[in-house]
Length: 234
Image (cartoon, rainbow, N blue to C red; front, top):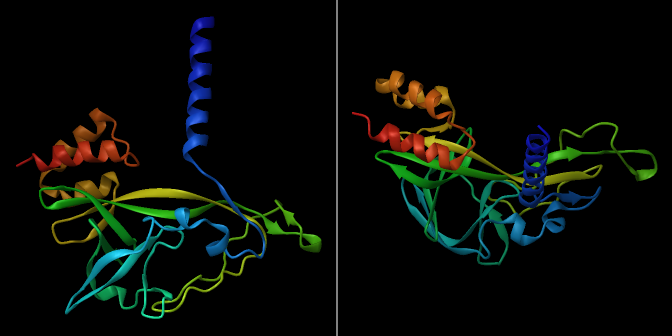
């Protein structure tokens, strides 16, 4: 019994340590501009702006592009060396940044293709999220009494990046969520109901497989395994 308890304790310590190692927390102090407080390596997915193509419904544009993890936007550098966000996003079919492919959805925003299974794609959305926030207290000091829930946008469509107005410290960390893109290029959050909707002809087999394999819809490995199974069904 003592050995069993010791094993569980060690596993809990290891899990906590692993989570702490992976979940980098960034503090943005009251009044700071997150675009300055967060290092470029954390703000953007790629180390530098890279040659890319924006495939619109009627034309293609080229330029130096990067994906902003901080904002969940695709940015480009114009002829004046200003960093801008894309306009007319609803007209975008696909974006290539180097070897990466991004798609835009009104609800999900930008998602990146990471695997293809027959005609269905697995995509990831990386974003910087607020894991905790502190309301500005008396005399401009930070207080943990309650959380701030709203702050102004840091950018506008096809406009230069602007400063966020933040009152009170906030804590940020990177977060990944997964999506499936169906045969008609519609984007769905990776959930059991959405899998059963996309693969409606094989709902019973897929539901049984999800239950048997205990699929974690937040695990890239599990989602790839599930999609591999789904793509093999007739």
